[in-house]
Length: 146
Image (cartoon, rainbow, N blue to C red; front, side, top):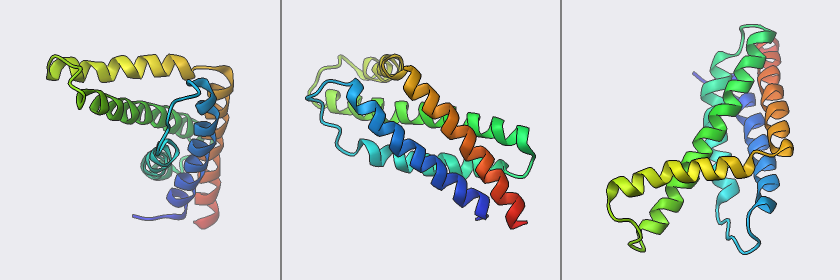
């Protein structure tokens, strides 16, 4: 059921995803084509904010902080999975994998590699502060709308 808290949580997490996406780009090679990188992260963030943070709003401040952190972790997981799966599909279209299992396991290898690459103080700090703020803002919106 749509609520103001769900909408605000989705919006806050989407803005966070866009900002962090821009912070991540310089960490990769200069010649890397990002394509729809920001847009994919934005859409995933809307879904995660709506479902994870917004649906749990209204349980108090400490729960809001935990919900925000959970939303940030879920966001990172799904974004890493989505981009790794897209990259695996691009590589598999060139016939670089020996079979389906090798291609499937490559997704998780790429997730780990990209996760290590983006695990900088700037990115982690932005994700923690932004996701906690998203949870708290959703909580405040829920109280105000009630």
